[in-house]
Figure: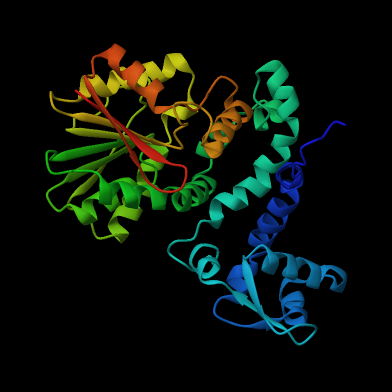
Amino acid sequence: MSTTTAHDPSPILQAAFGFWNSKVLLTAVGFGLFTTLGSKRLTGAEIGRELQLHPRGISDFLDALVAMKFLDRAGLGPEARYFNTPAGAQFLDRNSRRYVGGIMEMLNARLYKFWNDLPEALKTGKPQNEIKHTGTAMFEELYSDPDRLEQFMGAMTGLSRLNFEAFAEKFDFKPFKTLCDVGGATGLLCIEAAKRHPHLRCTSYDLPPVEPIAKKSIAAAGLSDRVATASGDFFKDPLPKADLITMGMILHDWNMEKKMHLIRAAYDALPPGGALVAIEALIDDDRRENVQGLLMSLNMLIEFGDAFDYSGADFRKWCGEVGFYRFDVIHLAGPSSAAIAYK
């Protein structure tokens, strides 16, 4: 008599149905549900009026968010009142300084539908984003519209803040006097480092359309005396000289040739003893654990075709070929780490 080991199919089914959970959360963020609640406690009917929802789906929608631990609820039935969890209030209310919903708004508006074409991306190796439908790449459209560019930079700020705060806390800045953040966007990495390390002089470096956005953000943080901006094209121009060069979610945007160009450019801009830091959702060296890093690499396929994410071992190999001699990896927040190469 043969026996069959009983396995639990729940993890398989959970992954298969995962897009249901995702769409409910992304929809709630898109509606501004967590912002509408703020510090209030509202009934389903009150929320429905605020968000202009049809009565049929209100309780299912809100209770699903309760079951997923994104909302909480007092009571049961029509008189029950819904309110933000502490995490929801901190990360999903647009009025919070630590709001991460901006990236979720972009996921909902753009990437959710583009990921439907993952099979085509895997068969062709070609991007499946705007360029497929309009012939114009995402960044080209963004950089042509200052308001839209600023909105995009704000969305990315929420995603990056936790990593940059952790980097500013965990990395040893004492040997370095100057920092240049390449692809610095709003200047957030420079701001977080400068706030915690008064001896540092920082430069946020990005394309010319981004510089006014960074200047405004740096001024709002009261750090214009220690955080400067510089503009240029990092594929055409030399990088600004600095003791420490950082790249936050930059290297993964590019193919192998362009990755190596950026690593060489950083090496050339650093003095002996200087360091290059890449902050990414680094894939674990054995490519078995960091699901988010691997999915991010698939997202680079969707967005750019030949771009990809990488492991700490990959980073060490590439930087070693250029001349860097010592390497380290520091875990930051969630799936993200800082890969460090010393000259």
